[in-house]
Length: 201
Image (tube, rainbow, N blue to C red):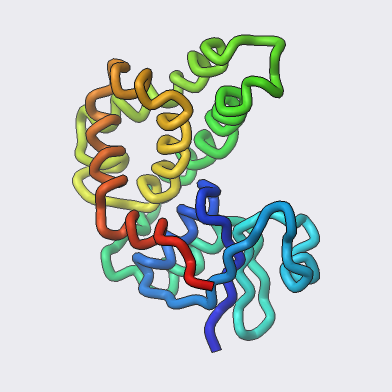
């Protein structure tokens, strides 16, 4: 019996979950959720009603994307995406900044019409603080934590993708050459294309 994953194709939290499951070679029973009509079986196990949600065969429910990622890679990590020791602490700190401050400004930028008190450019400029940090890392290394893909890359790339696509013309012309290269490599990679494929059910 496979774990059951409730997901939404374009949700960045769900994307990073599917990336981790892919790298962990963990098969799941994938249920693509309509955010306007969430299935009762998902709401029964996760009343907070946000994706992703993973239910294990023993009934255990994981409701946070990072928890699912750590669970999957903790079971099987053939490409050694999980750093250890202080490197793991550093990766988790960067992910926390992504999920907190950057996600706040990303949401305001993407949905600026809901936040008319400031302009989209205002929100974008605040989000750029994190982009500048990523650019500095990627100027020195191929990936966010060094010369190979690690947890921080797969946890953060869906959010950078979403930020970039709010105004792709602006992003492509912005002074983030290393970040642009990193994102382009990800978006055309076999693993990213695989996890973004539309579910058949």
